[in-house]
Image (cartoon, rainbow, N blue to C red; front, side):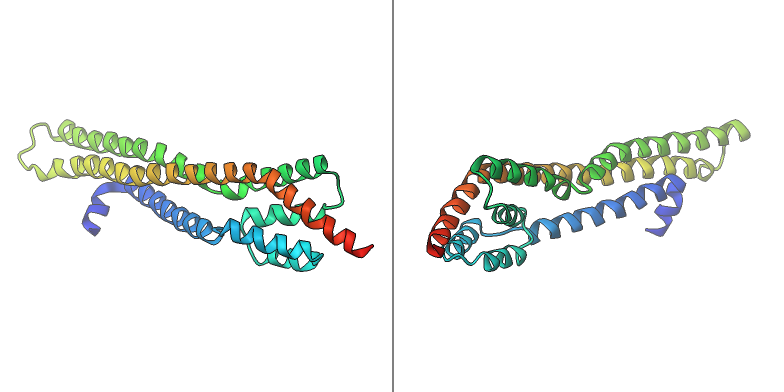
Amino acid sequence: MYDLIVKGGPVLWFIMALSVVVVAIVIERLLYFRRIKVDEDKLFQRIKATLEKGHFDEALSICDSNISPLSALIRIGIENRGESTTTKKEIIKDAASQEIPRLEKNVSTLDTIAHISPLLGLLGTVTGTMKAFGVLGTFGAVSDPTLLAKGISEALITTVGGIVVAVPAVIFYNYFVSKVNLSLLKLENQVNKLVIMIDSGAKPAEEGKR
């Protein structure tokens, strides 16, 4: 393995560094989406039951115990429960848009690596081929094929390395983009439901204080 890395030349080292970045991003994003996964129906029922009792602090504590984007939107809605329905909708929509950077964190980096890795492999192919032709230009007819092997090895190894890094980067980029889009769609669809839940929960609590 070490021999292959050495034969790949400096371009391969850069490709390997990008592979480390890809692995780090993939692990971080998988763990993130796992952490924010929540049973939405169960969360809604807990919050609604708490709001109907007028226990707003308890409802906020439930939101704080979850790090999902939905919990953040519910918290914003509860904190602005005194606003009109239209205002609450706008506030929650703005809060939903602020979740986008957290969901998309480092995903664009995967896309960039997926695009440049094959180009770096092509660069290694060119530099390796240049070395091989350089040997021919210097020595003319080469009786020892090992003199050409170094340049040819670099050309082939870097090409393979670039493809090996690009393929999983593309796969996981598309996977994370689909996860982000699905999460955003869910948040947008939950706005009206959130407002209705907060309004219906807050009114009985206000009436009970009278």
